Image (tube, rainbow, N blue to C red; front, side):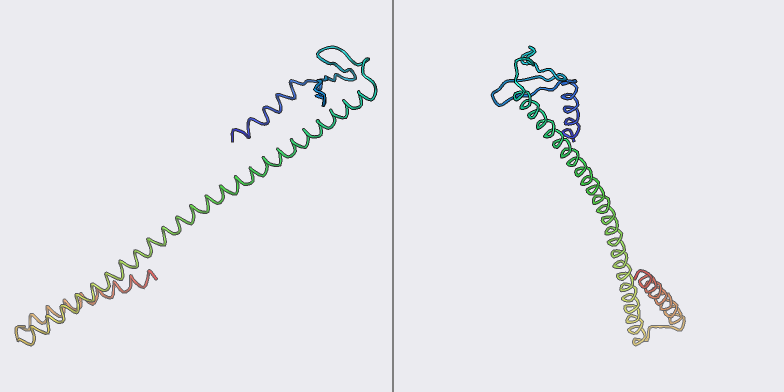
Length: 174
């Protein structure tokens, strides 16, 4: 991110430093500064001392450098645009990942609720079966009065209602 901000600032700084003059470094190491149609070397005007061929070579080198800078700037802009596109894609992927995590969390909660409802259903069924077995033992031993039998029937109705309620909850969660 810092590099993304620094490069345009440096490019702008270089362009402003050059002003309306352009510097050209030749293969022999001489540095020429071109202002308009005048050529300077170390601050001295050397326009009259250069041949037309040398001036053309300097201008050609300048054009090559300017074209290279233009291409580099275009590539830099392309890279920045691509980087921005990739950042957008990455942000979108993060957003989708968060959505999927929330969705998975909801599914896990729903699964847990189903499991709890199933356990409740099985417990209610076991309680009914246990009470029925106890009722049968007491009945076989003859320890139940007519009043006790009415109480047991009421308990069985309550337990069956609990089973039906647990079953409905289980069906609603599917």
